[in-house]
Image (cartoon, rainbow, N blue to C red; front, side, top):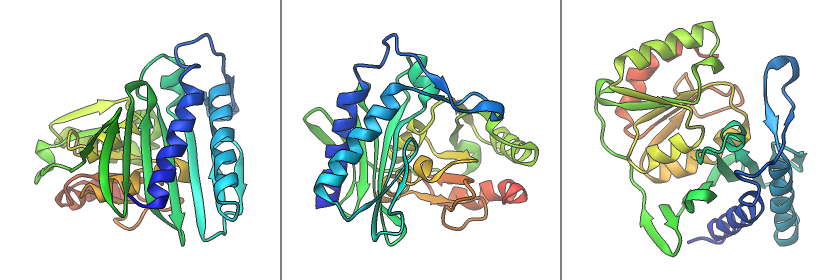
Length: 261
């Protein structure tokens, strides 16, 4: 395990220390969405990101940070940590254990280390230069995507079809109609399931860097691929296609490309 991989795990465990006491408690939430729609944030989100940032500042004071709750600090640095302390806050406030903590390290603008952590289930999915693996308690097991040659055999996911605009929704609907099975409402946990070889494809839109950066090293180190809806590297347009088997990319992009930004 590399130095930065070990530190990403340390950050995930620190976030869990903060978030778990709030989960399934009487915690309240604020709506930061306004006219754009319901977008909750809790004290757990804020305290967890603050705790992660303190550890980064103490260990690597020259590193940058981009976080959902507290914005950017030296985003032009060679090493930049990208943080989403609770991805899936709607699940969090609903008592559903599908929220995750997302932590990524970008080097020269590219995500090279990623963590998808689900503290309530005691799961840390990590990907980086030394490979992809799942940590659960004191056990560690390798992660590997599964073969799925045809979209008609695929298990696919998106968080909610309501995230798509008209053209995007039409494209997603066609992909869903072709696939064997679709599961909704999993947030970033669905990407962990792609890396674990339990699901085959996730397509989403309007994602921010803290939503997608961590999942790239996890899925790619497990043998999968993450691209945008044009088939190129993910970017700030926020349209993401993650697959376990690269043969699914062209099949999904037949329709997704029509709505690509």
